[in-house]
Length: 228
Image 1 (cartoon, rainbow, N blue to C red):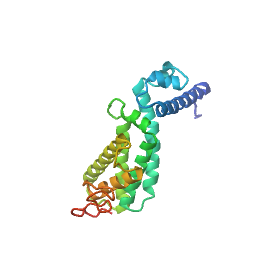
Image 2 (image 1 turned 60 degrees about the vertical axis):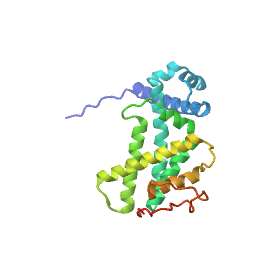
Image 3 (image 1 turned 45 degrees about the vertical axis):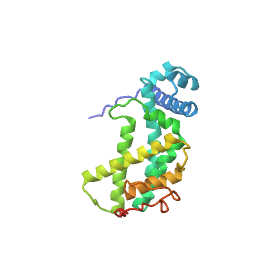
Image 4 (image 1 turned 90 degrees about the horizontal axis):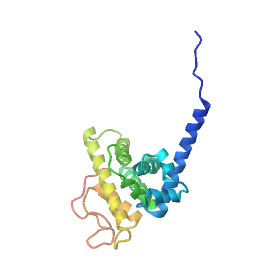
């Protein structure tokens, strides 16, 4: 029996490709506008900076929250891709944590206003940030298994560990970003090492090297279990 094929509507296909390209152009233009003018920018200001109108944006995105979600998806997808590459090159548990933390801080510091624009989007179930956090949690679990060669703890406990680590790193990173040039605040490299120490050795205060009571940035109380 001869197979019947449905002809492809060339005009519809071209239109869909055009819409996809235009949507990406608007996302990157909005990202650039936010980076230049700050996270508090309005939709009117975004449209003006992009040389278009709000009505054009709203043909592709429902509202400002939709623009925030789209810019967020663009931003975190690329950040996660870099985090995966960095973590995959690490050959120890501590090096893997440091690689993830370093890439996270590099990304948020390099695009601070864009990051703020994304994380201040209205809270919604299954939001862009929620999906990103969950994906990094899963990445941590995968890397833990890769580096240990076996599941050294039950899956449920491993997920709790990964979730707590992601939450701590995100909280510390956002606090670091918010404080700007506060006296005594480490630079990005120093903060990466500090957060890594907290994640690997336990959530105990670790003073930067040279600070009163510190011992080269290492904890001075009971040693933490060896997780490497």
